[in-house]
Amino acid sequence: MTGRLRAPTGRYAGKSAQQRQAERRQRFLDAALRLFGDTPGFRATTVASLSEAAGLSTRQFYEEFRTLEDVLAALHLQVNGWAETAVLAAGTGAAGLPLAERAAAIFRAYAANVTADPRRIRITFVEIIGVSPRLEEQRLARRARWVELICAEAKAAVARGEAAPRDNRIAAAAFIGSVNGLLHDWSAGWVDATLDEVVDELVRQLLGILRPSGWPAEA
Image (cartoon, rainbow, N blue to C red; front, side):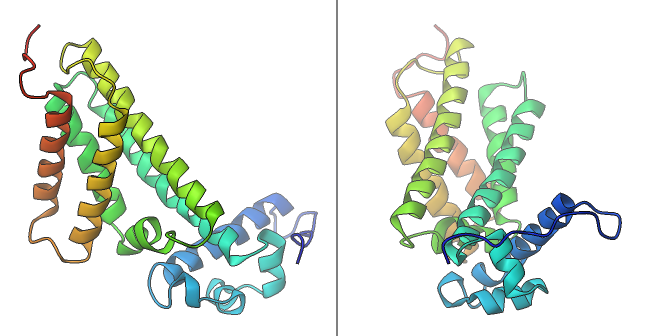
């Protein structure tokens, strides 16, 4: 299969071809969240089983995607997109708050979003790993976007006099690893703590990065 089949055109049941195509695509992604994010997982799912779970045909699958890897790639971006939307909204709502309160609001929004459904955790931190060089590149690119967001927050905090001026890229990358690992382990039941306690610990780690020992609280 070198490419997707062509989807039908024209209106049907009051919906345009583009609307129907978008709905079909989302039905496949919703079904993938159920199958990839739970049982049987990405590697044991077939095009036929995914199509059946979506209530669609395999022909309709190939109108939207070339391979199951394409579905996983789209789902990974969708799950990350949901989390980013939640973070940006929290950042807007926390405008003007002191750094510690702002960081807590942002990370509480992120944690609540990614842990709201354990299947999102599995897609983001488990199923995407080791599938192919292409998906590894996408995973790292999406991770780099989170690093950029943290660095932007750090830069703004420096401008407000709330953080030490420094290049935070390496520290932010390490911190993202802590965030992902801790939230995955918490979701799996390996961390005996509430989600609020997990968030509080992450905020303390971030503040330790932005306000290292010896940095004065006031310049």
